[in-house]
Image 1 (cartoon, one colour):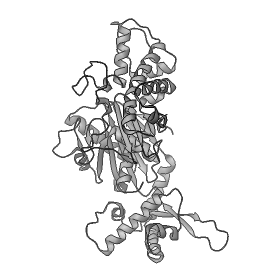
Image 2 (cartoon, rainbow, N blue to C red):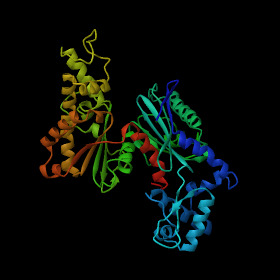
Image 3 (tube, one colour):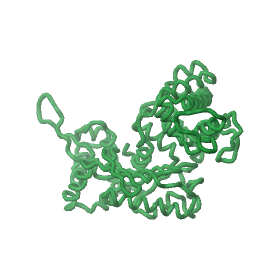
Image 4 (cartoon, rainbow, N blue to C red):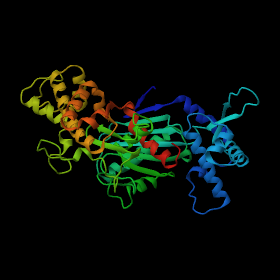
Length: 443
């Protein structure tokens, strides 16, 4: 997919999806107003009456078709949502007339009339996924099939807990949505993953943008006509793995987010563990470290001070100051190599730099020791390494496995697979967009 650089923004657009979207309003213009039709997804059904019952039945049909890997016939749909064929046919015809579902060919049969197949039109509605990190924002729009039709990044952004920064974020959202060309009335909602501690149930952020009188999700939502949902950036990565990635159809899994910081998503019996206030998974703050480094949380000995991109940078500076050499860069004047970022060190390790390899091994071994204890506690079937460190590949894998052998019991260790995320850089933002469709039971 081509990228266009423009005033500190990186924009990607699925041109085929855009062209398809541009054509759709022509067909829909003669039918009900789109805002009225979107009530199918967003209307609150509080009292029981005929109209609300039909809304609920239509939602079940759309949910079934959007989750199904194959298009379905009317009898198959009716059987699965427990409707009579006459009632189901009526509702499906109405959904077809409104453009929510479309014909998808005919079922191949040995004899007789071939019945029509139906599927959801993926371009009927959209969700927005956003990830806000310490240095950068990613904004993407997804159709109902969770295919990205628009993407935009602001790499010059620096996250600060100030009203000015929050207004910059909201302005970026508005500008990005306008650039997408997709009308706001076609958006089902926005899912946001932000670094730091978040209560996904209430929409509060406790480390950044904690000053509005309303919860952050509600405050951002008042600037748009669609609902906004908030969660931690690591947890949206875990949701992406569960829905689209390596944790799909795995009942018990760990998803490790190892980038500048360290986070963990625990999937137990097929459910993401959130905890009482949605704070579960603060893996970087367990007291497993050997050092006395001061953590950003104000405590000493947190695992994240030894296992993270921040830790890798600090370790590199210390080694350079002690006189060790690296092909990564010439020594700085103060001998610290202070300008080197953790991504540079990972790249140098892959290129064969001995010091960088040694430091990545050290990070991996300590991570493995911590994971070994977690294996003893929860017995996962798979551990998925995500985040920027996943690019380190086998350099990191061998070290993690060595560390796990030091702490994990052999039986649970044997049943635990260690793999890397396959979602790439879009994983977290896709997980954020998936929050919306999961809330509506569309995935």
